[in-house]
Image 1 (cartoon, rainbow, N blue to C red):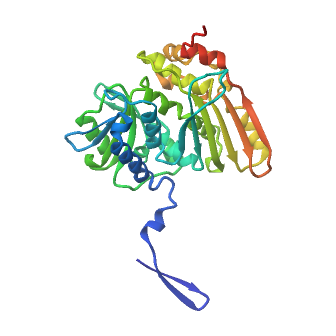
Image 2: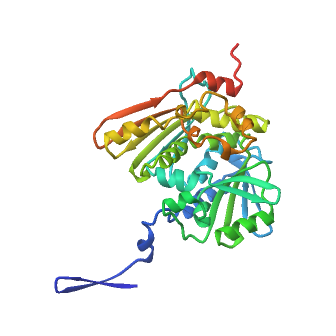
Image 3: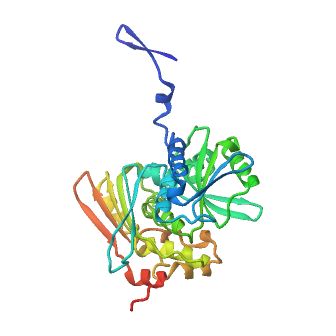
Length: 344
């Protein structure tokens, strides 16, 4: 495609690269990036102890913990797929007085892409009796969430890559329905699946520490493109066969054990004001195990105070002024209670 620009009396002619015209669209290319991570996992399936399969409609499925053994490394790769490769996710150590086991550390210079446009579980996937929380870049192809519309985000890639939190593998009919919602052929749909209560599922949920903080900022009306970099740390809970306990532990890991640091570019007054409302302690539901709150709300996430979903501790650093603030505090007592830790 040719383009002409007049500079003074001189006409300049150049050939525009179609890809360059769209690369600045919010969310563009994230499914392609996630696809690379998905293929990497499939290639390393034996190492990661995951199982790959292809449905009749040719949708590719990677099982990270439904029937597959999975594990810690599988959980890190699952979280990487979920964040479209836009973050570094590793196991680390944290405050041993809170939790002596491993912690998930997430670091990114692309928090908006990695967290809100990819990782956020904004698609309640329903089909007949099947239900799963859908995450990943596939949400951009579907494009029905108010969050994505608010951010004016989309992705024109002809494939969709996503993560499902559920206890069973997707059926052919489900995959066809999901592909239809994404406007793609089912053969171009790639699904990574794990139960929340599996080891891999625990890791990928706890890796949402930064995401919960970003979402809280969005709900408070903060411009997310002012977040330049992010670092999060939260403990990995013991996996459990109990459904409610599994969800409770992974949420408590962030609500009471998560710490997020954000590098931001704005004025000090705004950060000082919004920061006080960021930690999970700003919610009236703070202080109780999540499983207890979840049960009280009849196991419906949407009945829980949305202000609760945030890290226990948040540090904001303003690159414009060099000032920083810390809000909230870790609650090791509640982490131990939730994780069922016995100190002998």
